[in-house]
Length: 72
Image (cartoon, rainbow, N blue to C red; front, side):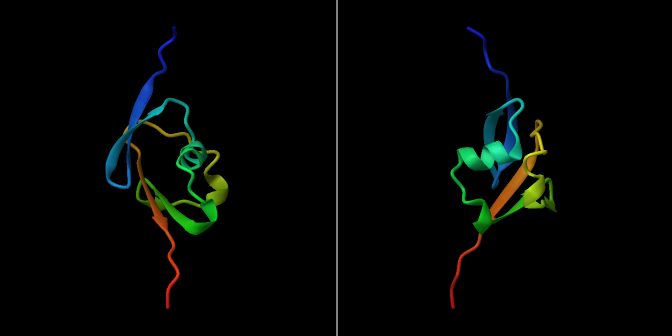
């Protein structure tokens, strides 16, 4: 049985392990997050949502995902 290698990232301030080769888009889909209702910060920079499929996660990346909440 082949062991899948993992990397460590920080997601919203918490440590998380993901498979090597995981894209930012994969991570968001696996978390069942509606992409239209969030802002994504990747390594301290706001990321354009059209670029998330191109971004492959690396060890020690920092991701912050902020949900928009309506109110009045």
